[in-house]
Amino acid sequence: MLLRHLLRAGPWLQWLPVTVLIALILWATSELFPDFASRQLYFRAALLVAALGICFVYDDPASETSDPTPSPLLKRRSIRTLLGITTWAGLVALTLIVAARGMDPVLVLSEEISNPFPVGRVLLEGSTMAAWGLAIAAVIAKRRDDEPGKFSSVALIAIYAISWMIPDQWKPWADPSDPRWDTALPYWWLALTLGLTVVLAFSWDSRVGWRLRRQPTGGESAAATRVDSRS
Amino acid sequence: MWELLAGLLKVPAAGVLGTALARWLPHPIVAPVALAGLGVVQVLASPGNQVFEGFSRSAPNVTFHFEWLAPWMPPSTFFPPDVIAARPASAHALYLVLFAVVLVYLTLEQGRRGRLAQLGAGVVFLTVLISVSFALASRNLSIGWFGLAAPDDVKLDFESEPCP
Image 1 (cartoon, chains in turn purple, yellow):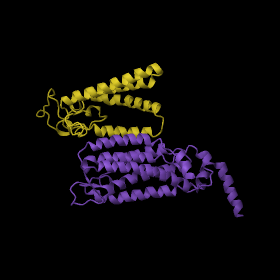
Image 2: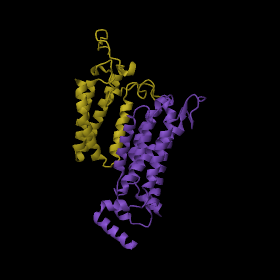
Image 3: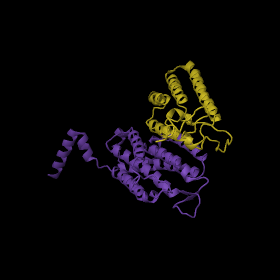
Image 4: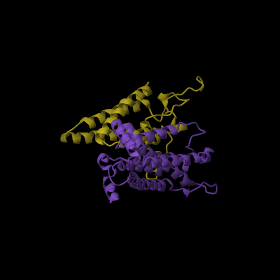
């Protein structure tokens, strides 16, 4: 029931420009020489654009009226996340299929393979970008902003740009010939875990602290109610 | 001089582009996607990019000089900006002016009669861009290290001014 309503009311329009830009990037990628070094900038851009799309899945202009429902926030968020991830996964799968054409897709790099495409690492990078987009949207939505996508997507672009300016020894971006390719792997796992944890932590209904800060009069009365109930 | 002018013209051109996008596609996703799209255009227009250099499997003998539309060119130690052959600064400055003017026209023109004129302006502008791109490709500007090889009419004196 809830799934059907969310399917109808959910934000879908953002996937249109995202798909158009990814299609352009994939066309350019398919014209390039089929090796990882030539194509990595392109499919990283495609993964970033796909992550921009997922930043909007918590947009809910009707939340003022639809929030007081029997369904807990976690349930509503889970369905929204599931719907967003399904579309995102489709775009990422398309990106990987096109980007890996002419190469040998492998989960872990090996010297035995002459022209490998490290699917595992690429998926990890893409998932981390998406998780951070969702995490920022979840944090902003917690403050009762009905449409956190616009802030989340801009913040994600800013983080992406800043991550390229990090000093080399800590920079998460690397290519397979770089020794940092292996040393950056724990950073990626850490960033993914952090993103998912924030999404989960900010998807519960416990909003007392935030309400107190946003509504001073309501907060006082709520505090008084709590004192009364204790006595 | 031209490169400096092109840098200044970029600001109003970007402003007009933002305004036009906000008018045509009023959705918050458009701004971040457009920003990412500009980044993609920059990568596509980087010197030495294979996409338009005759590598294309669909048209192996056709080269399309896309570099002159690059929003930004990497600075070179060896060449002053005005002789960056892959993106002639004067042509790029003129392109930015035309781009802004056409976008302003397309954004402001309204009414049924204006639709045809808008379409015409857009088609003429795109035709000019494509024609210039092919014309520049015939001069073979993007050969050499990092696409910075100068055309024949530019003389570079390396001996009197050694590279720092």
